Length: 152
Length: 173
Image (tube, rainbow over all chains, first blue to last red):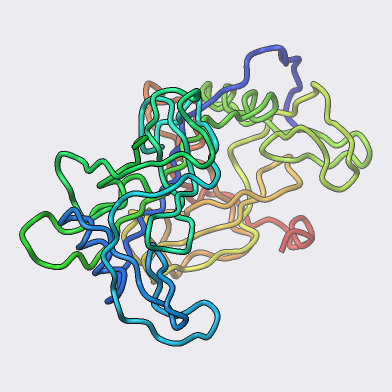
């Protein structure tokens, strides 16, 4: 059975870095394609629902009726913070490298809260009900990171 | 929102049709005490198993506890031979990502001498020769390349010994 020997179990456990990566790439389809193309062109588009209200980001189908939607509506890029959460210590993959808020922003002209970043500088600058506006990135790429909200 | 690295087509005027949303999970994996001991030993060319205090079965690689009896193994280790017996085998003719071996190759379940659990590995042998009960031995990397990794063993190779009795490995099939 081989020899047996005492080992020192108090030794430090070995560790190794391990990166697990899912390199997802998805086709946007006609509606979201228009939304992201709009972002690249520094425009914010929602979509009109069957009941006449506007939803942003847009969806392909009405969530209540399942009806296919097609009427894109350009929105003004300003809105109201309906709720928020302060990110005091951003993680490496989060959108900003300094503290910011994730907020539900109801964009003017739309009825749905939009979960996005508010770059407010300090938690003290955040308040439910506050007005925010879009600040576009210097270079846009057709991605959700093309803009953040900032206090208006 | 977690898709920080989304990006579409660059600004050439054409529509954005694709969203890239990679998810990257960065781990610092800890092997724990038992596997660390195993890995430090294999860096010295030694193969460590551990014996269950309840039924005496030897588990390889060494591990912290018995999966059958739910008891910890403590500090006792059992050093195993790098020779063993082929319990079962497969001839692989389909490529897999991350396996750079040339097709066809042979995967084997090896019962190391002194162990009561099998080890999956690759056998370097003629396809026509491989059989259950065949005696094999590990072929190691050059000693100066040994690290705390099971990759120190390159593959197994047949050795000139009579086949093992079926009864000696039948419970591992």
